[in-house]
Length: 183
Image (cartoon, rainbow, N blue to C red; front, side):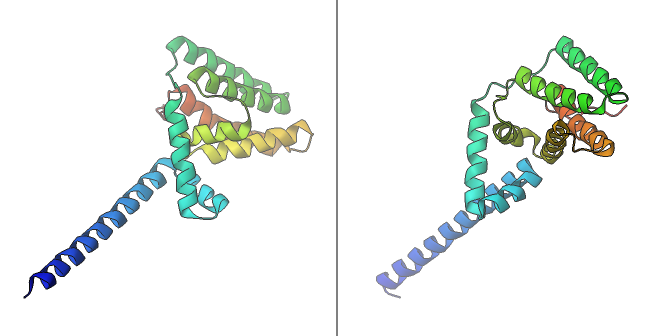
């Protein structure tokens, strides 16, 4: 076998190995994003129109989130918010619209207290998606019901569902990003 043939074979093997490494790296990165963002991953893929554009968007969200100073709540603050949530739930019986608006306000205040920017709903959703991608659709749905409630277009059952949906994100934020222990 000539030297040129041997060099060509080695170069071809190196190229194949590099391509395999690249494919493995992309698959691993895609799997990580899917696991981290949960259902939000597919939602962004659909919204962006391609996986590469969606993954670029999700990585940008990660970078923005990494620059935020997200902090845990103190036990005192956690208790204050838990009491506020209890009051909102009690208010639901007589004033469901007001209770849902209070739930939305509490979630936004809790986000702010933890260090998330709260200007603009879409930016809130984007920032939350990094750590709370699995509960984000609940937040979107609840917020949409709250908006319709402002125009008196939501049923009591929809308002009840919104309270439950707000509660999922509220609990995660209240417990510093972890799902609370079932009691």
